[in-house]
Structure formats: C-alpha cells, structure tokens
Length: 242
Image (tube, rainbow, N blue to C red; front, side, top):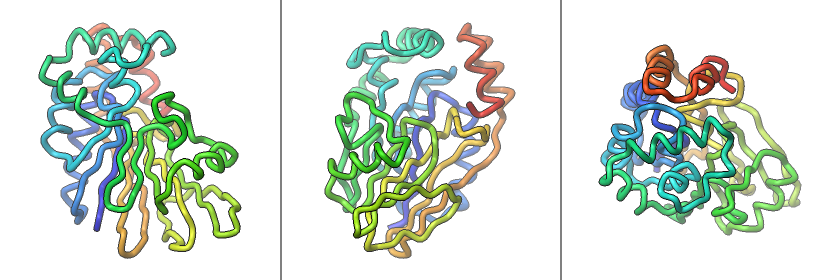
C-alpha cells in the first residue's frame, strides 16, 4: 500500500492547490490527513471541503476541536486564538458538521494514526524529543505511528534493544524489526525553518518513507491573511517557516 500522508493544512488553500499538483505525479493508493484542517489562514471552507471529498480518511486536530468548542481555546497564543475565533465565525455549518465527525486517532492498515501523540491524544502533547518519544512508544501497539501537530517533520525509531533514535533525513528505509513514530510536518504552516510545505510518501511494501517538499504561492496566502483582518504575524511567519 502506498500512502500520501499530510497534516496541519491550517486553511492554506494555496499550499493545498500546489500539493494537489504534486500529488498527481506520485503513484499512491491512499491519501490521509492527520488533522488541523483549519486555523491560522484565510480559507477554511474550501480546504475543509477538499479534505472531505478527496482524502481516504482524515483526523481532527486541536485547532479543529477549538473551532468546534470541543477544546478550550484559551490556551492558544493570541494570534492563534484570534484566528480560531475568526474561523468559527466564517466556517459554514456543513463544514463544522464535517469536522465534528472526525476522530483524533485511528487504527487502520496496521498503522496507528493520531494528530498529536499516542499518550493522552486529547491533551495535545508534542512528540518532539527522544525522551518524549520513548514514553509514547508504550501507548500504541503497531509498528508504525504517524503524527502531526508540532509541524516538525522527523522520525523516531525504537530498536529491538529498546533504544530510541531520531532521524532527520528526507528519505529512509524503515527497519522492519524496529518501531517508528513519524511526524509528517505541516502542509500549511511549516515551522522547521523551511517555508516550503511538506508531506510524506510511505510505501508499506518497500518500507520507504520519503519527505516531499514543494513551493507554493506564499504571497497570495499572506495577502489573504491581511485582507480578512487576521493578525499580520500569521502572514509574516510563513515566509520564514517558523
């Protein structure tokens, strides 16, 4: 099975349009979205509609839950909170209904999928260090777990001797005797210092994981953010990938 896996689109329609063009050239069987469909950017409705119509399955993330009032949004930073409130006002009821159907974790195709972390997924923890990854390996049974949430692409590997390592590479053949937590990064708001969106291609037969990056119409996304009255800091950060 060949998967295209992405996360944290955050209402970035321009990034999604470019992703569609790139994905057409990648032979795959399934498309999977790991949540945070909305938030931060200016096109929540067309993005939600595309996710609903074009993915094989999708999860909800913390921003999706905040918009639905299923998670208290007061913990968000001020710009994210303003974007949440704006999205709540502008998202159609049908798209709210769609988000409300989405789980935050799923077991499918022998893989564990979750937006934030296997440990307490509804508390929106980040899996960002080897120490945190060590703990999270105890909270799922599958060999592979795909996550998003931190916007930081990377792979944690737990060897048969229980040692955990991190990999910062664009392509890796997974050791079938190891277990892995793979963060697919962000399609709509990269934060690893690279402003280009990223998604993952995974082939379950060859065990190859590849991080795929592409450019998009960043300027139009920034202009839309400012035009609709969202905080300008949300436009500024996209240029630097932070």
